[in-house]
Length: 296
Image 1 (tube, rainbow, N blue to C red):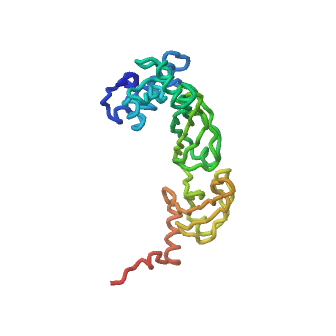
Image 2: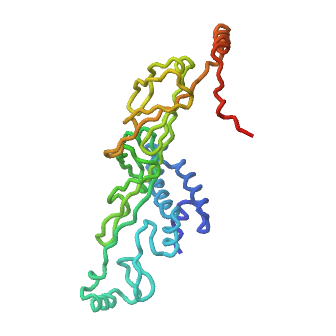
Image 3: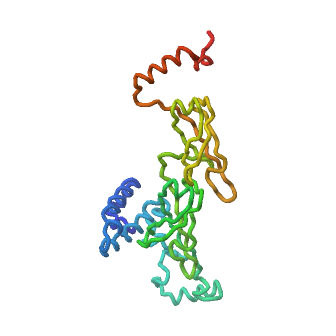
């Protein structure tokens, strides 16, 4: 049974998927080209480790490899239809001359007629992007399993967990078959101010007591810069205002920005302000929790 890839990752053939993942992460921290600029030896080993992990981290590919149906590059290993397997181009014990006669009778074209073209394996990668890169689009670089780097165009408005398909950037095909594709799964980092719901952007906007009471225009951050927002006089905390067209753009669709108001008190009250609040309380008392009373 094949064991070259297990040796590359430094794990036993009986290793669990969790053990394989831990071994790969450890080697990536040691070998990644960004951490070892100019070290050709580590770069070469990085490529081998990445290729080994691509197969062993995928349970389906790993099973094919363990059964000898694919090689360490993920390429299919041709199977002898008359019993026993052999690699493409490798002679069987009886000699390829005899096999060629049989294939000629079966397909009328000798060995050439039997050499079916196969598309190469797809390769899967994960790419973490910032919230703003996902919202507005941009370019990002991803390292492929062979160690090469590729620039990826991030579509404007892409959602977390979606994949970008790069045609022909996977494993090479066999017998002049097309190369597989590279599938880049996008993971979006959270933002300190914005959150997303579909195409809408959500934000919590802190207000002073006097801004909420008296109203006025305040600046609000959006994906494309700050804009002015009119706060109605007498606004309560939790009130949601809508900025139309200030959300995520995806194709011809465009979301809104939802602004939830939050009244924020100062850290401390000076005696004069506290006295004013006492006067205001005595003259304008009200109970905002009156509707929460539950009848027995």
